Length: 128
Image (cartoon, rainbow, N blue to C red; front, side, top):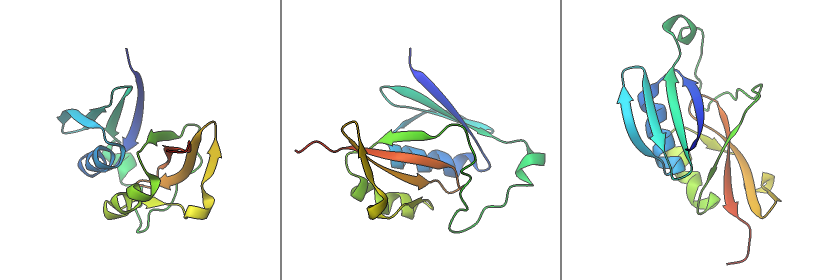
């Protein structure tokens, strides 16, 4: 059994491409109103918010962060620096390099997806 997270999004196709590329996940199922991605450790479901709610969500460039959430996803990447141009190219944003911090053997930095959802990027901070 895998751990699972659900993110409610306005544009399922765009967000599916974003998390597939940025987090190295594999798309295992798609439909009109949802997509499911997986890694070895967990499953991420992207679910379209209802049209009435989607109409109230304004997307901006760069994305306005929606930080008042009780849960933040974090994705392991081989290199935060290598992930930066991928995240930016897909419409997201990674915080400046000087905002990274080390905790429990991992270097960490916050980022936001194209809809402003805050997530973390993690890389090993152990010497190679």
